[in-house]
Image 1: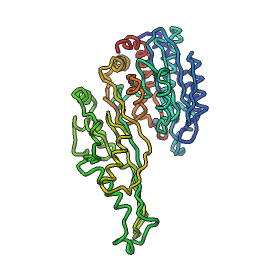
Image 2: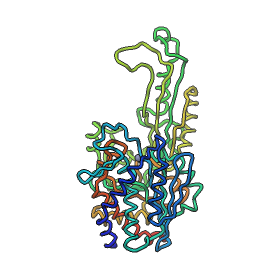
Image 3: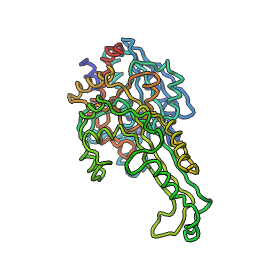
Image 4: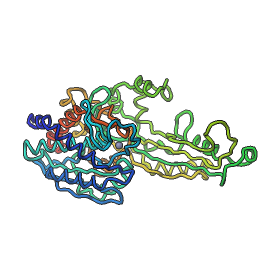
Length: 453
Ligand SMILES: [Zn+2]
């Protein structure tokens, strides 16, 4: 790696922290309608790095786009988001959430990790190239949206409408860093998600259970039966056709899973479990954790839940559910299949609301861009990279990978104690340094693999 670039990063960590403080001070809680000023600030910070910027309005928070030429025509796209989660509960913070505070080698603020720390790191990487070489190693495009924390409501529309603008040879995703074993971790995709609400109404008001118990329908029982029709104790999801589009793990996937650290005892201790579903262990547990699509009851409510007893027959019951989807399942297809399944099983009275969805995304582990990200991680961190076929969570990666055909890889400045979304969110400055150096090394070598695709 270019030693002058590396030295610049090490000598200018304070500038990176100052950038991070500036970003964190600009409130951008998308769930509370904030973010427009932050979009303008972010656009200004990109312009200062010689990027031509635009602020694309959407019905919600705008998308910021920046572009700058480089020594090579190879084009790298970067994706981040400038919005953050609410800071509440405020009383659990040890320092004000919107004033980034340094304590013991860590920076604390809402957004320090998710996702402004990653933006500040990438800005410092650009500064290093501008200062040392006066130009970037390749063309850089950067999409920074403002609604990731509320489901990226308008990002896919932006991507569809601007396919040529965004076109690139590779993309670096928003986040990454080190795992609990202090190894860099990478991921080559995300699971999809469908979020729904099921509502059962059997009458206009709750009844005395002595009057209605023998002759009135009970909303709570009906909802429980409907849920039982969706998944049974064998953990098999019963929706007709549910698994049709789900790819099983390949030999390559299993080989990747084999190299990942064993987390059984950690998870058991952390969550107070004595076993996993279907008593899975070893490689089978790792496979199930990612490659088994889910039907999770996230919340369930009906009737009386206070102290003591209340003999009531509820007229309404509600469940919230999410389905984590593996490639190539699609949330809209699952939603339609769920509706048909409920109807076919006598539950056409259950109201079903679509509360959001994102399709899964997956990049080929043999893609040269993916391999470069792994190789450069191992060079910078001096440790083996843990590469996940995809992560269990979800995000707006699908249109980039599967509509524009851009391989998406990850790098970052996070660590397992970073508490994203929680009070005292933080990053460690040493991870900020290594993550920035890793990004610089990847960008430096990116032109050599961009043409291989
Ligand atoms: Zn987040």
